[in-house]
Image (cartoon, rainbow, N blue to C red; front, side):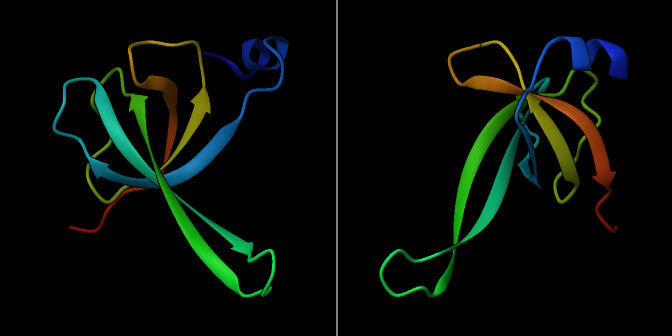
Length: 91
């Protein structure tokens, strides 16, 4: 998809995360880490969440840093699509 089509579809959420699993066909599991301040104590804490994303060409491998974009439901758990691989894992 070109950038022009992405703009016309409206604002879609984008997340950057680390691929933790690529076992399934055309599906990757991406772990996104957020840093937020605790509501009461103000200490910075990390929270992690895993998303399943669609990877059409099975390009992403474990350890890659990827950018994914929100999309229509593709299956029971897949609501994200791989947009690009930012950094490949070192081998």
